[in-house]
Image (cartoon, rainbow, N blue to C red; front, top):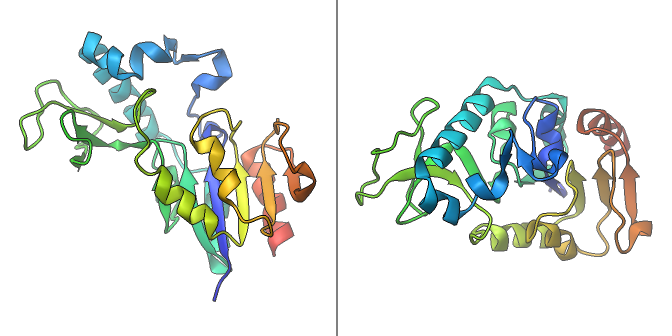
Length: 227
């Protein structure tokens, strides 16, 4: 039986593939205030703006390529049962070849019903058009969890963390909740590794292996430590 290696990834792992994150620019994401494009209220106020914003983000995601950090996690599957939980809405883990990926905040390459978020569909190309409807007759929008919405996969993610033999955090500031609480579900006996250029202070830091490097460089060190 392979040991279960649970990996929580954040924006830092995708940044090296050229995908920007709002946390780097004081709440601005590609020049927009996140509350103008990433809330239910923004969608009600200006659905065309929000739809176009995510269409452009989807176009960027499809043009991006997985980096060495994504591919390094695939390599670990040879020795571990790797379970990835990602805060990212891109599909770079899947395209790199990872077998088990849980998306906390949805995935931008799918659409969802504005009426029932459980109704999701693959996006044909990069664009969801206004007037493109689900089977219930409601407008389709990006399959992304916005600020103020519930995170439906958080309980499943907590269950995965409870079963971790090892835990790795990559490219996250632990500033977004409820994802930031997932570390608390990891068994105390399980080794923990954190890869990020700026690792935040946290409780029980003595039990954490800190790798203060970018995701790609940190993954190289992690592969050596776990080999």
